[in-house]
Image 1 (tube, rainbow, N blue to C red):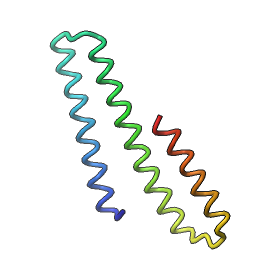
Image 2 (cartoon, rainbow, N blue to C red; image 1 turned 180 degrees about the vertical axis):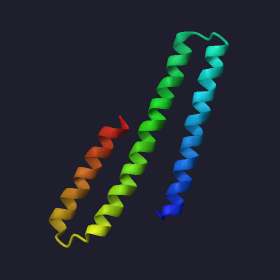
Image 3 (cartoon, helix red, strand yellow; image 1 turned 180 degrees about the horizontal axis):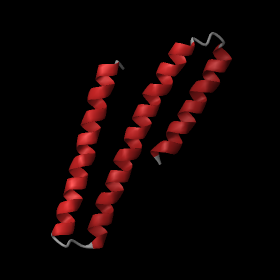
Image 4 (cartoon, rainbow, N blue to C red; image 1 turned 90 degrees about the horizontal axis):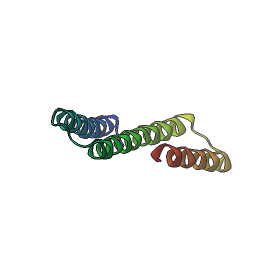
Length: 91
């Protein structure tokens, strides 16, 4: 993914998060039930985690390319570590 594609993707995801936050503000103004608000907060948490994972994935890919690791075993271990970190962040 190019830097420009990543920037656009991040901006789009941030727009979604902003929309969720605005929705929660409206729900609070309208005195909606706590359960409804908590559900929306959960959606925001998920969206932020996915955004973090998206940025982390692209950052680690760029770092691995820049490092120019010639040893396939080392590169595979680094890719495995990256996948594990992404799994943790997405939860």
